Image (cartoon, rainbow, N blue to C red):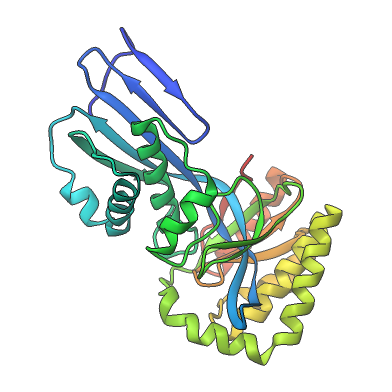
Length: 311
């Protein structure tokens, strides 16, 4: 991407996007969206007589960015070829609002690995939509983003400002959850790419077999959010991880359950249709605890990673 000096410039910023104009008459627009580190809960919820996949995602401070360089010569084909869902989002947005994109160049950047359970695909799409908002001076509320996502994929709730019980298949917010519980996460990536569509039948079958346990855990999770009880939220997250083992198993779940109390973790979180698993801490782990965790993860053959809560 071009470098530039901040002279004779104009900058405009919003919460999730912004613009910058330099002396060469290139206008730089951006959109950003955070990702998740799996889900505190995934399970069944009956909506309109059908069992749907309900999730409560764990937002983290890792992001995807979309950029549009208005007036910049070049070709965005390669960037959009590897992000066909972003291309589709652009087409839907422009058609929906009857807009024409001025000439320019798309570019993207992300801290979220694909296929691991960090909502990378949804974050890319939402960042793209927010970048388009910046280009056209608009602000797309969640109610406008959800229908676009519905045309593209089963999505995550990263376009919301807080936690929510969310139906990922039909992009419907069932309930926005109170408070903004902040968890620190020490986690590993088991390096397994999971095709969400391919494992959906196994998920739904597992839901039916364990419906009572899932419903009980959902009720306890919602109650924990209402109380602002982070330790109980972590406990319910652990239950959700254990319930999901039959559908998309994690190799390291049992040893992590066995060592949870030793490390003083408040719970275990997994990407239910991904390869991530980690410990939840309501308080930031000390350097010595991080060191002990790193050694434990290394003994299982994995590198310890750390993520801060989204603020």
